[in-house]
Image (cartoon, rainbow, N blue to C red; front, top):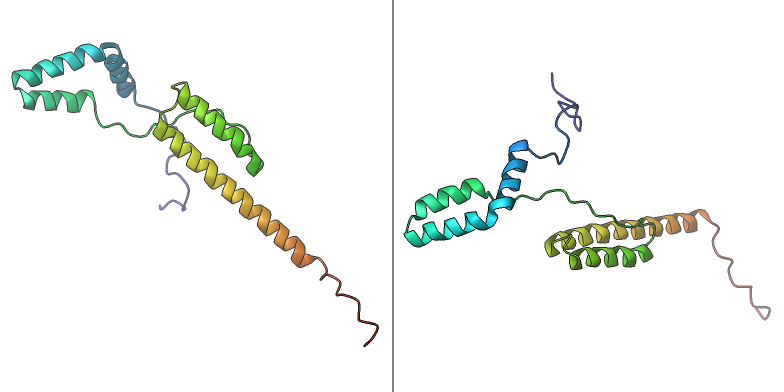
Length: 144
């Protein structure tokens, strides 16, 4: 049986953003012993065992993929609200809560949302003008 487009084959499956227990364990181990592991990797590299170094590092520190991040942004009900959102993003970067690349991605999402708001407002104004009566024409000249 084929599933309908847009419907999950397993709606009760793994929630989006949930990380594997092994990944969480490896990240905590790496964070706890990161300095010692880095020192050992440097010692192995200095000793000339590049194959062992590459194999260990590939397994201990795989290429990071984007992970979901939580940022409390203010409501964006109007384009003016983006100033507050931008200051929140900049403050999070300054506090070390967000990486600059993450902040740039969030700022892009805010920008896209604000553009969508502007487009919606424009379409509503245009529809209102089209539904309304045509503007009254200037009174006819009495001399004519």
